[in-house]
Figure (cartoon, rainbow, N blue to C red):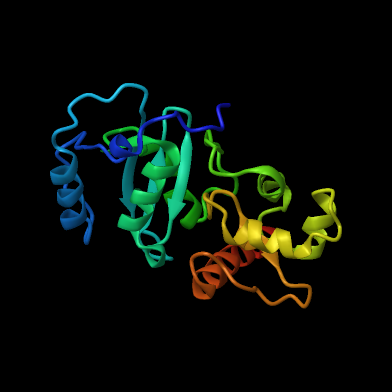
Length: 220
């Protein structure tokens, strides 16, 4: 898997292209128009990576999904500011940002199944280029925490090979570019309280409550 963004001049990293006639999500129209106007004279860009995006509704608010030709690269909550996330992804990946046609359909289906209680594990190809070093080690471990269960930051630090790196585990979870799909919400404080979360503490409580309820129901 390629974990590095192409070496593209900063002036062309934000080229935005509409891929379908799908209506954009609320709040994004003006921002996308601004990007188009700013970059309209950039008709051909060599070496860029296309990022496809769409939004999907969920019990934790509207989720922004972004993918490259490698796989799912970013999931963002509304509280993160979707238009700012699109800007940041373009800067990090060195890409054109395109409205998704069918590229993210499978992701949307699996997320819907997850929130409906019909899916416990995601079967998606991930583009992990936005994770580095110890953060990536931590995030690759998280799917090993079973659905409906939690692990402390200290336990995850030990499992990741650095028992004393508890704070670094917290940082890795807080900056997880693929929340929900990579289950950093299952990492909690040693006293069992949820702790902070990229999507907000309320969103973390919803995810933990959903998994706890459904796993308990399956056991009964």
